[in-house]
Length: 379
Image 1 (cartoon, helix red, strand yellow):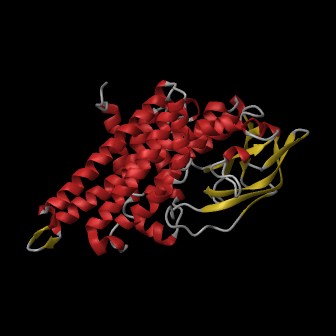
Image 2: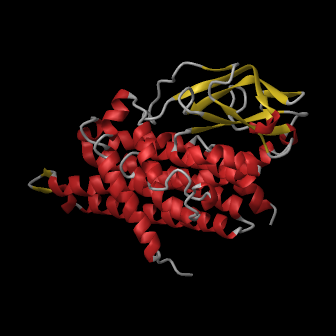
Image 3: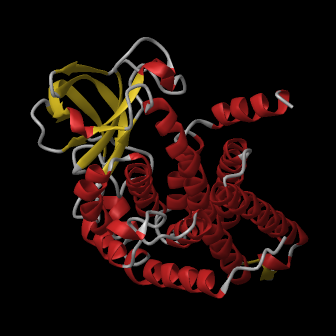
């Protein structure tokens, strides 16, 4: 096994770090404070090929790997976790259309998605179906050359602001085999949105319920065949879990760097607190845990790239471990800052707030344990 990044991957990493330093870091605190959705900045990222990182080049994608994408999201999240995480969701939707869409659908939707003139959201969760996603109740009934959607989705990133919604809806009976996937453009009659949620973190992206009331879309907007929707949704989430793990790496690495700098400057008892062994041991554990999480995320990304048969449990393991341990690293960084860590003049509290939701979305970490345990017990 060679754990060395290639020259191209180092270049990708440097490009993303440069963009993060120039276009995200100076504004992240303001976006968080004002709940500003930086669409122009996202479009600038798209100009660098970051809106379709692992989409094919035919319709303007970058044609890179999942590992390349993990490097990008880690770098961007070291400046603004919330904005990087939204970009990861957009990438997931774009990849699903590129992978499972018809030739006509790819030609119709992907060019706009690659430039982020079309901003995309992923709609699976409902008020009554979170972890039990296969019990979703939103319906899509076939009527001639159209499907009519009725129901609602909850906690949708980009809700009310996105231009395209990838929606999982029930076309058949109960369970996962009754679910299909649909592409619903903004402005479709019958599509509406709930109030903007006031959140602990992820404030640079809007979150709202997405509501369908006799919302009719052309049958050509179905992604894949009837009954394939849940399978497609889970394939999307495998990659989404790697991406959100990578976003956790970026936030944790920023907090470790901030804590290392702070303890070198902060003096107590006539010496920098970095001189105390208790501080040194804490930093050592934080660095070790971060490296372990990074290796798991990168390994899961490679599993997706190579089509490893164990890719799904590897993605679940990486997501579970990285999002838990990286939140703990942020918390330890805040503790090392003392009272200063709790005020917004210092960035660690924002990283902590942003990373907390990573243990919930893309499948809760409890559901990750279910996936992992099922794999272990299957032998």
